[in-house]
Image (cartoon, rainbow, N blue to C red; front, side, top):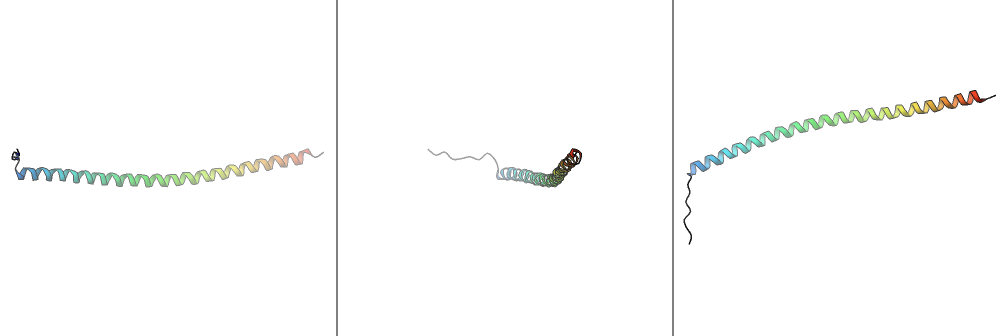
Length: 85
């Protein structure tokens, strides 16, 4: 019915394999932490650049509004002063 289980490895071999696997997992986790730190640093850099771009775009929009208002005012002034007989 139930046959006895035989183990073909010694306890020392099994523990050595487990220790090697744990060391490998620990190395992978450390590499992952370094990768996450690098990505975090890059994202922070991108945030700073995006803030600069947003500020620059806001300034450009205001400059265009001022130029457009000036052009309209200049055209209105020319029309007003040159059309009087």
